[in-house]
Image 1 (cartoon, rainbow, N blue to C red):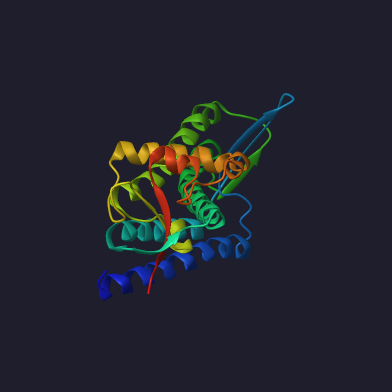
Image 2 (cartoon, rainbow, N blue to C red):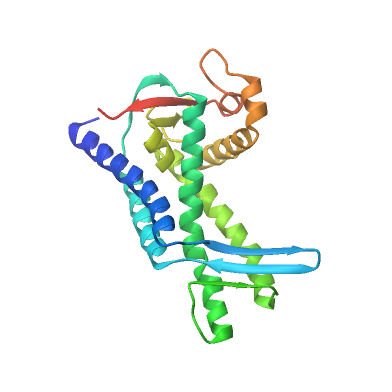
Length: 233
């Protein structure tokens, strides 16, 4: 890695840490109670709510800019060995929060706008104890689109040999079987992401299974990958 690339990666990492911290600070400072859309029906009663905030849309814009920059300028040097499970879990949680919050902030605009058309007044949040036809038509597609985009959030960096925001923050990288600087094909990246979700969502079983001599979990072995530590200096 050249000195210019190293400097760019350091700057991106600092920006990523700051942006993740800003997400929590914004929610606390601006007293944001909900980001996204929710519809719950139980015992014959329904609760429908949605919420976003101008600061969260601004945060989403910064997040997209950071993500694009990571796909262009980030080049991590792999030098420090195998990443620990704890570090990998934290990286996944950061990525999950980062992607879900951004997509929920922008996705909530649709139900908020529909509610404004229905009531004649726009509000950054609403809550009601009954459903409308638009709730049913909107709910499932919005969830599916959000899940699909979150999945792509993890897939795209693998196809470019880059890190996700969580991996950048925690100093780790997923490497393919054919070289530390290599790139996954799209199908390989999809398969890897799917198995990683399964592995991290069933952590007790993953941890119980242990790791092989190379520090790989069962889903690393299944996809013939390694998760390694990287350094930025």
